Amino acid sequence: MKLYSLSVLHKGATKSNLLKSAYDLSSFSFFQRSSVQEFMTFTSALIVERSAHGSRASVKEQEYLCHVYVRNDSLSAVVIADSEYPQRVAFTLLDKVLEEFSRQVDSIDWPSGNPETINYKALDIHLAKYQNPREADAMTKVQAELDETKIILHSTMESLLERGEKLDDLVQKSEHLGNQSKAFYKTARKQNSCCEVM
Image (cartoon, rainbow, N blue to C red; front, side, top):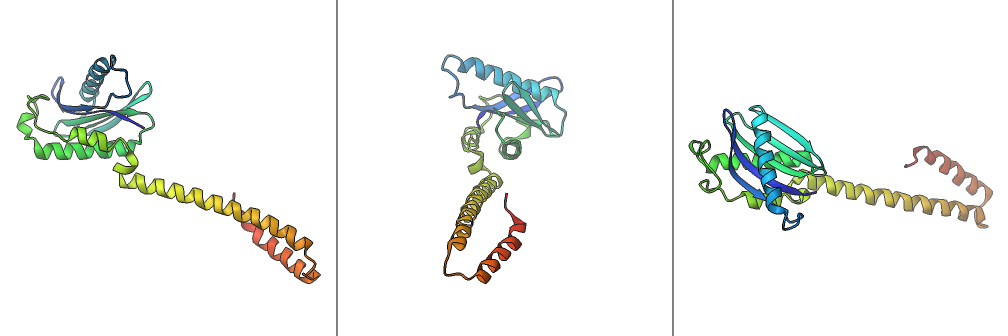
């Protein structure tokens, strides 16, 4: 799971205007980085231009997913991630960035602003923080912990079942248990087997 680009744009009447962007291109070779960055900037602008006001969308391009959110006030954000990155976390990031950006940057500056004139420094921080969706998003973190607990629970059940099978052998071999006790154990075992764990 990886985030490559996070951009804030203004959707104009005919074209979009890049206001601020952050990139993590460390997975690309040094010589490809400038071309990849230009392509991501172009793609982000194109997606915003083609998206309606008040809409959210995810666009797949090869092994990448571009998540876009265009607000009704024309402020927009795009995050480019790999296809494994959770969509819900990506849109949470976009919401957070746009909300923060609109509080820190005056809306008068949006139509004519550019990355050099806009004073908003948090994009790089957000891009780094959200690289690990489990740490950045509380709900994803809780889900991961639940999944781990479920795995531990299943392995514990399996070990109990193995122990139960060995207990059956011991009961059969036992000389100290009477026939009536063995019959009781078998009946109890049959009654309890109705609820087998998969």
